[in-house]
Length: 335
Image (cartoon, rainbow, N blue to C red; front, side, top):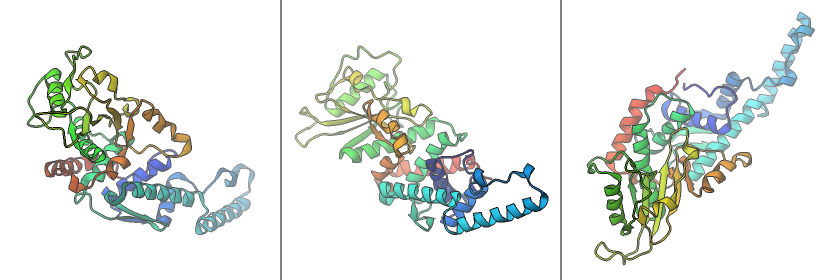
């Protein structure tokens, strides 16, 4: 079994653990009672401070009696679903149920009041499995190199944003895609402006050492009256920065700076994509608002997965996702 998070994990951290265990561990499903027992054993949930024995003040007979009484109270509370571990298990199931509702058909788990169950093996549908494992790379400190999953994540985001705008998605980030020419930033940006049907800018603000100028993915939707021979101004453009590292929340897509790179007829929309699932509880919603006030549209793991099914991904990308997952599974902490 994959090791549970240490310390006093949040509901989101336990939900992430449950997803990994069901998709990659030895368990194909877990009932609410099984979850509660695991949490009780791991975190001592069912021995609250107010019921702990003050052993130094008790005789042996009194200690034995109080221990029996305490265990009976604990068992009764667990049977009634009112123990701390049962409540923790219920909270995790509610979080997983929320994720399933947001993601829809691409979510790989079945969730109900009785527990969770695997719907599809990860190698049959590696999309969500990849996003969850990339998220665990940071959240669980997995010893997995950065560059390949970052590249694959950007390719997935390009597909997701294409669906979001109903148009075209393109990975612009460095290093260049397989088969693309090796060129400096200016040449690469001019090629992008031509593809978008927008005029290139003066690029006076761009360093000669620039690689992607913080732009990882661009998506756009033009109109039928726009042709390569006669482009017409005005279209929806999304400029997206992606982050799978520790600094993802500090990233921001500076659309204003890109107006010096490409003379967009209409101001693009900024976006930030990341493979994590920030909490939606009231006390943590400031994280979402902080990203959006950049201003950028946040695309977390759930939003990205909700826009795609595995059928929306190119076959070559699916093959690379499977290969990367297979090579990364031995990094999971198995106890």
